[in-house]
Length: 204
Image (tube, rainbow, N blue to C red):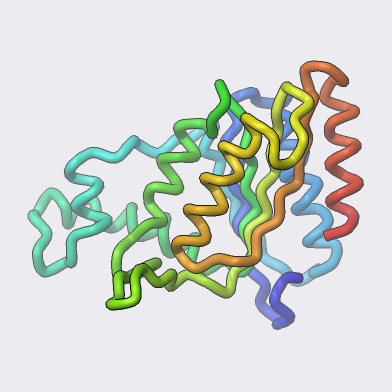
């Protein structure tokens, strides 16, 4: 469930590069429609990584993300503000809906670049004497998976993607994760895959 309070914030992330033909975009839109119908006062922030990809990490960006401000170089400080804005956008959300198309048995590189900005020491996780501790819990993440093959949950290569996402978001403290799957697109066509996903969306 979305947290029951008056200011529900939803972050909607698309990463497909297929434009209007994208199945994952159709599925994330259906998820957003369901969530906003159930929560009419919800606010939705949208980020399209497919049309506006983030730069891959480099030494300056990594330094801006991970180096405490008092130890940053001037280049790092200049890069820090937009990087912090991406993280703040994530942290402001109660529910995050993420479109995850399978590209060559992996997630899109533009989505990986966004996820790389979420693992920030002392902000979304920290190391303790008992091991790592996630600090970004209390949020719900809904992954909209789209794949051409008729993959079943737990089977390869679908599990490669889902295990990575579960591990990464679990590492930063998120335990409430749901996968909505539109698979078999290459065999049944997009309509059948989307219709099957919508059956699962209706149960959210």
